[in-house]
Image (cartoon, rainbow, N blue to C red):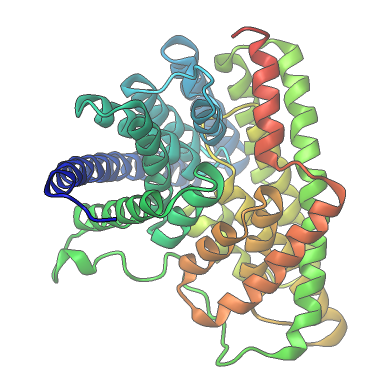
Length: 439
C-alpha cells in the first residue's frame, strides 16, 4: 500500500510527539531516581554510622521503628496510594482500576520508600521506581495532551524506565515492560518502549556522572562485582543448577502463599500504616541484628555479604532472616518492591546450596549465587526474560548467562506445576478484594 504525502506528514508529527514524550519521561524518571538514590544513601549512612558507635541490637530495631513510622505516617496522612510495592498498583491502573497515579503519588512514594529502605526495611527500590516512573509518565502524557492510548503506553514506558534506571539495566527494564505490562504488543509499541528504556538509562548515567572522563561512561561497570572465575560453561554444573532451579521453584511457590496469608492477617488487624510499619521495622531490625554487620548495608543488594559466608549454617541463617524479613515487609505493604529482595532471597538459597556442595563434594559451581537470584525471581513472576536479563545485567558477566538461564527456566517450570498464579496475580487479587465491590 502506497504511503501518501499526507500520511507521511501525519506520521512524522506523531513520531515527533512521541519523541518529545519519551524524552520527557526519560529525563523526569532519571531525575527522580537520582534524588531517590541519594535519599536512601543519606538515611542508610546515618543508620550505619549509629551502628558503628552504638550496639547493633539497639540501633537496627530503633532505625526500623523510625523508618517505618515516618514512612507509614507519610502514606497514612498524605497519600494512601503510595503504600505497597508500586508494581501491583501500576498493573491495576493498566487494567482500568481507578488507582491514584500522579505527582502526589510520585513524591510521597519517593520520600516514604527512601526512608523505609534506608531505615533497614528489606524492600527493594525497583517497585517505587516503577510507580514513580509510571506516575511521572502519566503526568508528562497529560501535559503533552496525549490521547488515552498514548497515556497507557506512557505509563508502561515509565514503569519499565524506572526499573531500568534503578539497576542501570536497559534490557531487564525493556523485558519487564513487554512481558508483564504490554503483552501481545505490536512492533511499533515494542520499538517505542525500547527507545524509551534506553533513553532513560542514558539520562540516568548523564545525571550520575561525576569526576573525570566523559559523563556517558559513568555507571557502566557492573553493579555487583562477582568473581565467577569462569572462562567457559561446565557441563558438570548442569545437574546442580537444575537442582537449584527446582528448589527455587518450590520455595517461591510456597513463599508467595505465605505472603498472601500474612497480608490477610495484617488486613484483619486494621492497623493504619503509621502503626503497622513501625512494628514491622522493629521485628525486622531485631532479626537483622542476628546477622553479621556486613549485612547492614543494602548496597550491591547484599550480594557482597553473601560472598563472605563460608558455612551452610551461616548461609541458612541469612536465607531465613532475609526471606522472613522481606515476606513480612511485603505483606505489610511497606513502600518498596519485592523484585530486588527476591533476587537476594534466591541468592541466599544459591549460597546455601553452594556451601552444602562444598561440604559434601569439596566442589561447587561458582555461579550458584546469581543463578539462585534469577531462579527465585523468575519463579515468583514467571517472566523468564526479565529474570534472566536483569540478573545478568547486575554482573555484566557473560559467563553467568547460561547458568542463570538453566536455573531460572527450571524454577519457572517447577513452580508452574504447583501454582498457576504468580505473586503479581495473588497480590492483585488481594488488592481488589480489600478495595471491596464497586471501588
